[in-house]
Amino acid sequence: MSVNVHLYLDVNGLESPAEADRLGTVVNLVLKEHGIDSWMRVSVVHDPPSIAARSEPHPIIVRGFGEWSKQFERDVETEIHALAPQARIDLDWGYPDEE
View 1: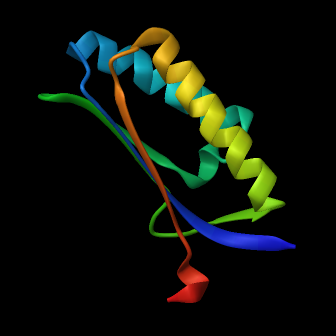
View 2: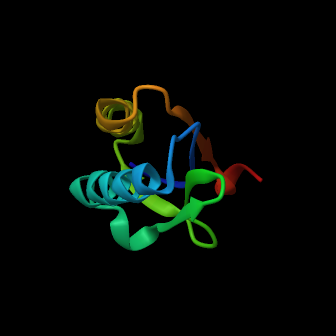
């Protein structure tokens, strides 16, 4: 069964604009590896250095969300912390069908 979800990802605590740029590339690669890059908008901010990724205004349609989301969250954390161990990751899901 498929589920409609919104993805909200914020990465803060970055040390420099260059680190934000590198992590923006990493976030885009993880989104692509999971097949949701076309659903997402990724913003890299230099002051203060941070990244925001949003699926809005349209939700992502995911089959097997329970297992898929666990793997996605692990991959996001692993890839971001590999380059920026101090980064704070805030990843949240929204469920528009429940609103």
